Amino acid sequence: MSKLSLAAIVNHCNALLRTRDINDYDGAANGLQVENSGAVTRIAATVDASLATVRLAIKARANLMIVHHGLFWSPSHPWVGKKYELLQALLDNDIAVYSSHLPLDAHPKLGNNAQLCAALDLRGLKPFFVSHGQEIGLQSHANISRDELALRIHRATGNKPLLIPGGPKQCRRIGVVTGGAGGELKQAAKEGVDTFITGEGPHWTYALAEELGVNVLYGGHYATETFGVKALAAHLSKKFRVPWVFLDHPTGL
Image (tube, rainbow, N blue to C red):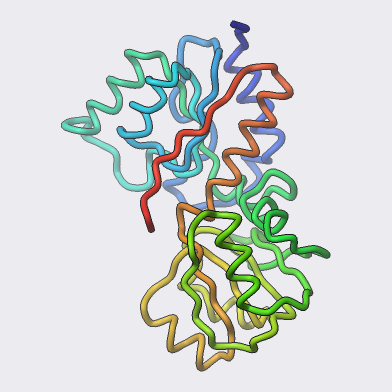
């Protein structure tokens, strides 16, 4: 089995994803969050860094986890209880963790939004939806019935989307922001889309979608964000000739 320097992968990811240039939530802590002894022999891609996915990485004999949701969203100290178990599992099994949140969402080829748009066969993509000072989503001019669009999302994610039929039956301007952007529905509508695809949103967005005249399709936070880590891991595997595996740990949310 080939070995590769962890530093080489980290440096490549930081440059590719523009990790230092993309603004994000404070807790995102994009980049290398936990290092290992320095070598990588197998990459594991997964959406969330958690004790459960670390255990899956151990079973897969991976020593680098590529994640979308990292370890530090809220104060992570003290390292006791399950947090201690997680840290001990990483250290005992020499597993590094590299996390990329908005940088991975926003990447024009490997990103969650770009990959989901490709899976939905949306074309003529343009930047959409400002978050933390930069556009992270994509929009497409199209002519697709909302029922057909819902079917495409189901096929792409394996998850039947929740449809709020607040807009026209025929979707002509579609905005895509994976994850939990439902609470920003008003912003999406202001940018002119008649249909908004995201992962999840609050209860009150149903009435708001009707008031705004916008269709909303909630495809699942987890389900819409498996694409980026898979694409990034596949890219790294091809470039550095290191095997990779996807660790599926769905939340149903």
